[in-house]
Amino acid sequence: MILVCFLASLAFAGGQGEKGADAFPSRTPTIVIGYGAGGGTDTAIRPIVAEMEKFFGRSITVVNMPGADSAVAADYVLNQKADGYTWFGTGNSALAVMLKLRGLSNTDWREWETLMTVIGPSLLVVRKDSPIRTMDDVIEYFQREDVVAGVTGLGSEPHLFIDEVHSLSGGRSITYTPYGGCHPAAVAVIRREADIAPVAMSAVLDFVRAGEVHPIVAFGTTEPVEIEIDGKTVSIPNIGAAYPPAAHLENIQESWPIYVPRSVPVEIRRKIREAFEWAVQQPSVQEFADSRGLLVSGVTGEEADRIMSFVESNVGWALEAAGIAEHSPASFDIPKPEDWVWPPAGWNVEY
Image (tube, rainbow, N blue to C red):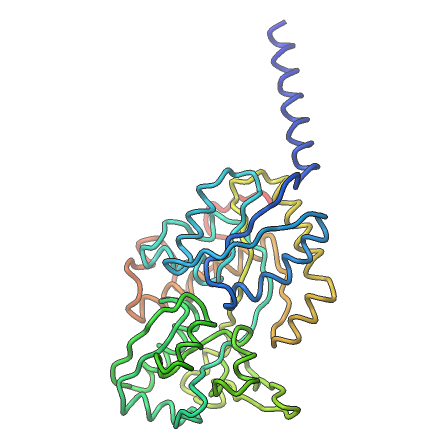
């Protein structure tokens, strides 16, 4: 009799789990974005969330929670019930490795399922009346003046871009001021709080088109970036063409994924992934990407994890080289890029 009751309870629990996944979402999910409204992460995620709402037939609340380069938002989400109703949004390098190496949070990509939204280049911008107009001017300025650079956050990919260029130039001192988003970093340039800023192009395209900032060069692309301004096509050179010593920065593109804690039951994570994969195929998302100079990624599952692992290795050791890391990648057994392999030892994840 006891055995019969035990088996019956197992069957009931299993049925309840299936019903829970089938009914998801039965209330409003929330995505917590680790940077401010209007920034690169916020701009990239909102159009896809809007389409996911259509798939689910239910609204999704978007909350901006900047702080500690998105560590505040990450830890907040992890402290919520693991029922699939609270997601996280930040840049790929932040969650891949930056938060952990800078001692801002103990989390990294292994705790999250990654849904890659869009990818795109970054721009190096100055104010519209700056005497800096070309990459040669940038190098000369770095070598002649002490520089204040506005950045999204310390250790972000745009920050690493400008830090590498400054290092290669043999420049004088450079001070990085974090503004919690690419949009506010560009505003700091406009207000003369910063001399220069590396920013996601998607977040500052309106400033560029309005003539409020002047774009010098594009990172994360092997081709020039073309922007329509007042009916004319303006070509912004890629970093490899404008400054060959930094050509390796052409291949590092920023991405702004949606993350779901892996502690969420796999059946519910699959429902969220299904909605995401449908959303990125909708015409509105492609139109948004085209209008902002972005490429739709849509990568999920093991391939997304492989990319995050690769970013962890490359960005982690770049942070170490730049002197930004509080902890060495070696202390977390993160392989150097030349030693990186997929999958890591002992990797066993259900997708």
